[in-house]
Length: 134
Image (cartoon, rainbow, N blue to C red; front, side, top):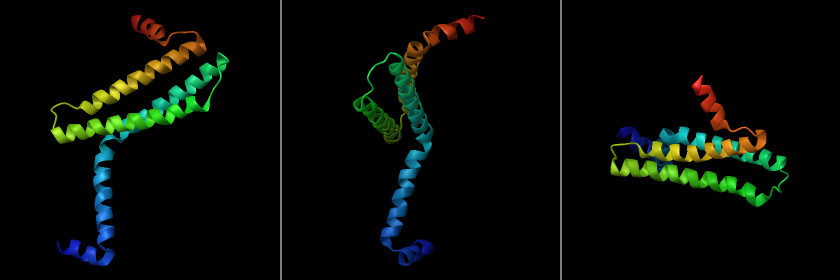
């Protein structure tokens, strides 16, 4: 207690409160950082494969289409954070954040697979099935 009071006098109340708020936010974000980073990765991978597929089909690439990338990242981040908050708040016996992150990743991976099929003409699903049958 003595060190807290000393820090308040030394650094000021606003600095101590700001540090406490940063610590609270970090303790919420750090456990889900892997989900957030993977979400950014798959959204950018989807965007890149989509751009290559559009270029191959000679479709017009617009800034509105590219703007969707930032919208998807924000929406996915908010969804992951809300479900993590609900897991913590309601003390759920299962990890709903994993389910939401899996649903988001599955959606993006299917889109990447479709783009890859447009680029190469080969379905990734059929290639994977052929490899598993060996």
